Amino acid sequence: MKIGIIGGGITGLTAALALRKSGITSVVYEQAVELNEIGAGIWLQPNAIKVLDWLGLKGEIQKQGIELNKMEITNNQLIPIKKIKSEVVQDEDGNRTIAIHRARLQKILYNEVLKSNEVHLNKKYIHHSFSSDSINLQFEDGEDSVDILLGADGIDSSVRKALFPNSPLRNSGQVCWRGISKMNLPDSLKSLGQEAWGKQIRFGFSQIAKEEVYWFAVANVEHLKKVDGLDRKKFITKLFESFSPIINELIANTESTNIHQAILHDLKRLPDWYQSKMCLIGDAAHATTPNMGQGACQGIEDAFYISKYLSKSPQNVQGAFEEFQLKRREKVDYVVNTSWQFGKMAHSTIGQPIMKLLMKMTPDSVINSQMNKLYAIDK
Ligand SMILES: Cc1cc2nc3c(=O)[nH]c(=O)nc-3n(C[C@H](O)[C@H](O)[C@H](O)COP(=O)(O)OP(=O)(O)OC[C@H]3O[C@@H](n4cnc5c(N)ncnc54)[C@H](O)[C@@H]3O)c2cc1C
Image (tube, rainbow, N blue to C red; front, side):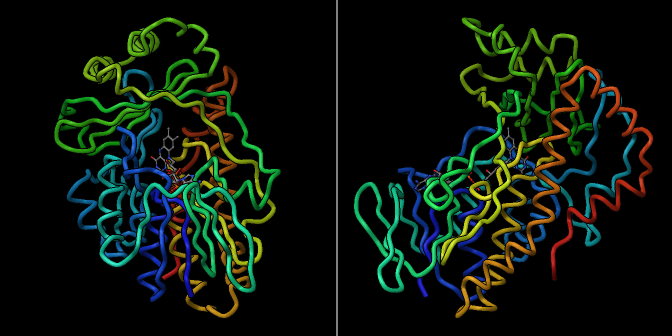
């Protein structure tokens, strides 16, 4: 059985490793000439860490990242809106959120995949056709054939467009800037993930390595009209000037050319993720806005479950995909919808105060039970 994976991002590489762990070989086809993530960090929450631990990679990720003891939502002066107990950033097995540079995470995954899998770089999938039992893949430069295809090619997935041409993205109306600041946070903040809220704008950050602090800033897109012709860094500095001095320092210590800007989108819910012997995973299937820091974590979970069901029913691929979709649907829908609502409320004049009130009123036990549900993975 030859499985092809289109896309060598976090989901595709993790899927190759999970399949290998389940005794199935796969081939990864990646359009990029070399694998290189953008200069930003990522928060990997306990559900993802559990899968990465199963793959034997937790130790390396801990070594190259920073384990967080707490995640806090604060006012613009870093005073917590609600004091949250540390338990909510760890699951019942004690796995904590790890903040890491994206490029380092990708390298850890890629090096591990290379030990036993073929990875074809510079291979851009264009479309596919069928012959007897095979799927013929057409790339920009050549062809190949596989028995099963996983589309892990991200939010703009070409595999998805081929399977489900009507799969529109939703524009959240928010813009996000990300950067890495060359500095160390004070000791009291070194193991914290923080998100500071001002008037319809947010600024999140955490240490990801020595002398590297990852930060993100989110605002409504209307703000972009004010950026025209202005240097990106000068604009963000102005936008967040009333925030804590630490936040101003983070922006000041980031090179303007290394500030990435993206309009935040998600994918309108697809009725199905699979067709015949082809299945979408990760952002290709269910891209979410990043407000819950769960997009990649959900892709990593997909990798775990798709390998589990394919190894359980190798002769019944469609059955395996059906089980996969059934298993994953509820959590994925929860993440995508909650994240969307969170973004809408946090950036609206009426919504933000309501959210703050709800946060203050929600008992720790309720938050804990929601997080434990989110972090749960089958043994
Ligand atoms: C601002 C922001 C912050 C975020 N923060 C977090 C966070 O803290 N925690 C978290 O869990 N998630 C976070 N996410 C979400 C996370 O980045 C994504 O969910 C994750 O990167 C998706 O991984 P993927 O492998 O499915 O897709 P991608 O990362 O998009 O990878 C797809 C791969 O497929 C390749 N590809 C595309 N088309 C083709 C083709 N035709 N042929 C061959 N290859 C192709 C691409 O080159 C790429 O390598 C954030 C997202 C944003 C925008």
